[in-house]
Length: 238
Image (cartoon, rainbow, N blue to C red):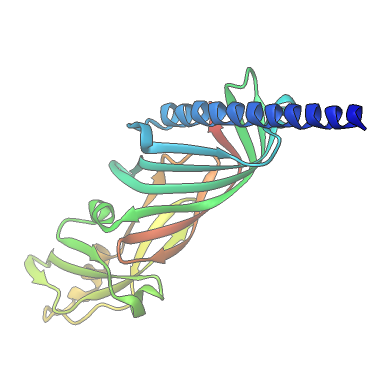
């Protein structure tokens, strides 16, 4: 009985040591992975990227060079929209079946899902001159609509749009952001409505997200627009 008790104590001690070593190893790996994400995506600041490696034990996963699931969060990611640069306020991604490649210097996730936020300030950076984008209230936001106000040059005249325009935000094609007005109010300038629509309907391809991630559904909020993310063969670092 005494020998059994000693064996159990030794087993418990070894288990605790293994768990401690496993947690130390995963914390170090998360820090290293976050640094690689910061470097790969050109992020600034220690808090601009975080990586959480889920599942236990970590050591057996890393020995097999495959992680079950990983959570990544980035802030301050810079994307390009046409010839302009915009900030993606936050990106969150859940990656599954993550394969570690080479000398653990890169990783590729078989599948990924998540979300990305773009503020109204950055949506305005994409808008034509004289066009402003803002929150349209909950009822309109539930329809993925934003409020557009505009003062534009039409038919040689400076036209102030007499009332807000409500535009639907959507993704068309691959990472193509588009705003399309529900209707154009009368401007008082004959024949101007068509030209006004040409100004207030605008869009741009969004580039600069991690390779393999694509923008999907949209959700207008008080702060900006949230985009659902989906992807396959997504590069975590490299």
